[in-house]
Structure formats: structure tokens, C-alpha cells
Image (tube, rainbow, N blue to C red; front, side, top):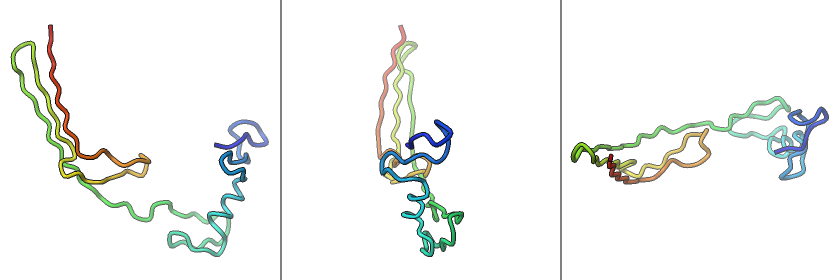
Length: 109
């Protein structure tokens, strides 16, 4: 989160609240000119550095089922991430859920 820039809220040029730095100060600290970051040589302030240089694939095995007991009652179940695979999509920001089992009983009246 930043403070408002010179043109008000939503404009560039504010101060990063967490550290008190401007955007230029953050760039100079994290992407110093002459350094190599993620295999990219930083030559100027416009150098683009990829955040993710490799995105591993993953597979998750799930099994779901259920059955009807009678016209009023149903049972459902789900066994997800059976092999407890660790996985994450870059846009999530958190790991995917681990192994889980869910059971559900529904009764209509």
C-alpha cells in the first residue's frame, strides 16, 4: 500500500507505507543496476525481470461419490489430493490444500 501520489489517490509516486520508500528507492534496493537477478542483467530502470523463471507442473488425484438411501436421504463423500501433493499457482499466493476427506448427509423433508 502506498500513500497518495502528487495527483491524489491512485496516482503513482506515493510512498510505500511498510518501508517509507519511494518506488525508485525500492527498485534501486531490489534491482540494483549491474546486478543479475533471475538470470537477467539489470542495465537500467526499465529492465524487466521475471518473477517466476520456472513454473513446475503438478497433478492432484481426487475421488468423489455418493448414493441415495431413499427419496429423502443422500450421502456424499470426497477424498481430495489423495497423494498429498504440494502445489501452488503463482496467482494464489498460498499453497493448495493438502489431503482431505469430506462426508455429507442430506435429508429432505
